[in-house]
Length: 360
Image 1 (spheres, one colour):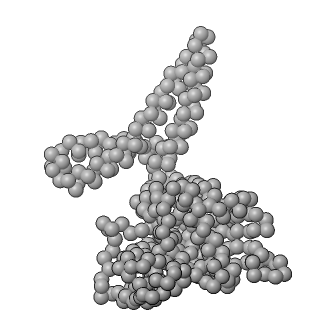
Image 2 (image 1 turned 180 degrees about the horizontal axis):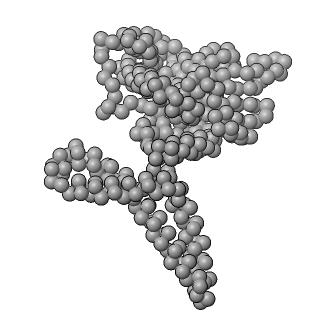
């Protein structure tokens, strides 16, 4: 094990003793807020310290087995124990590295996924629709729930803009690296001469604000407009001003929702999206101040970045951030995103581990 990892783990073991002491104090037990905070930290630290205890025990078992190698009657059993123990050490060290990585509390939250058509006209809007369908299919594959918060369709079935709310285990944590520019190379359905065109859409992934810590919107800072919804929905959707658009005047950020029939429901959804966009703006401003540290990190979310290319003639998907190329594009477009998401996650973990080593 690398020395910096062992140093970090020793600190966890020491911190566990401190937390055990704090939880035994009457003044802490009488303050429910402090008690809950310390209990949560205790659970996290215990998970790390417990695995470290097992790692140390495994090291001790291997050392004991090595001492038995000189005994002819015990040598074969000792070699088996050493081989088994070394395999377990590798797994334990991998587990401990992951447990030591800093956690983003937003990872467990639902995600808002905004998809906007970019360059390429109608083909870009069709591709935006394909990308929205890809995420929807992936969500269905892993048991997540998808809700369309707002949609601006074009005349041929694509989306100029669509906002999805995706809820499920670690939804934002899994999708956060999808933010950026997505480029497609294919023959559009509108192309009569079979030429390959290049177009693009942008994706922005934001965590749903935590209601307990979300910013409070000042009503004086909002302009709320209602209008008649457009698009699919039957007769009712065109008869009432149920669609809602909310403008945050200080920032100019806009959110709208026209998916539901109820103006009240659409207003609530639009305010949720608005809060997420404002928090994302604040997040990006904080990240901009740390640009030197964040340069090159996966998932920076800069929409000007081209993060991925979907090449249909070659059946190829390439993620340019981690030089990942997969030749199963049709499956991916049907929601088979698991390999892509896992590769991005592992690359991010490697970067975080490198930062942890530098800062230790």
